[in-house]
Image 1 (cartoon, rainbow, N blue to C red):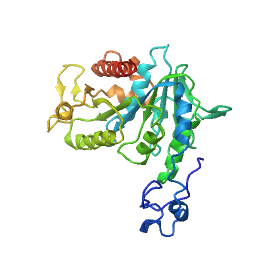
Image 2: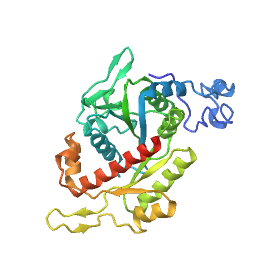
Image 3: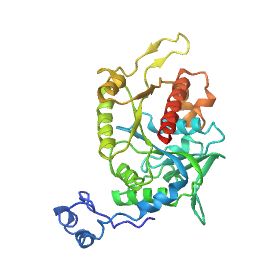
Image 4: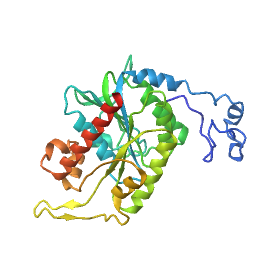
Length: 316
């Protein structure tokens, strides 16, 4: 396991805080004297190590969501599948949702294990050009609960970014947990010099989801992560027989389109509900190639194309 501090109090101010080792939460902590000395306030050398390790990765994309259950990991999986359809491109999918790793199942990789080589951890391959890494490969059972404090999560993410041997990669997709917490800060910190192309933020149409997305947008702006755009998932249901559209989650405040217009952020597209999405994810298959005639597939492909155009434009 990574070189991290011993267990810390729940209200730990963090090693970079001016209150490190001095706050009331620090009393009795085994790391108090170390933090108070300022030894941990220096930049983590792993930041430069990550930059070197990922120097062979052309594009780095974050997939974020304000809350859980909006289809963030599903989108990450389909994005990886879609990009990997170009056999000349090498795609990598990194799952840093440490407490809820669902990527192994969605990619058909349950019960797979990670192997060590002289150059680091070897990812698990779905296809010759699609590699995956997840904490799910390091636990005994998919039912095992991962109960970790912040420093241990931070150490695990550091290992994923620094020690995985991705090789030459065109797109690295990082599937993050919901919210704006330890995992997000760690990913942004360690990729700070490795150049993140941008973030795709997933939401559903109702205001309760959009409210959290606004927080996610503010987070990206505060940590200087470019926002590629918003994806509105579960955007109605199109009946396969009559083709009528039903709004399962009504956009009571105008939905993602109005929010994007108000905040000046691109709306990459809206993906309707399709029962085949859940079915293909549960069986570890690509929804894009197994249900090619679905309106949701058309939406996915347009969104993926816009993400590629964003990355190409950034290169130019």
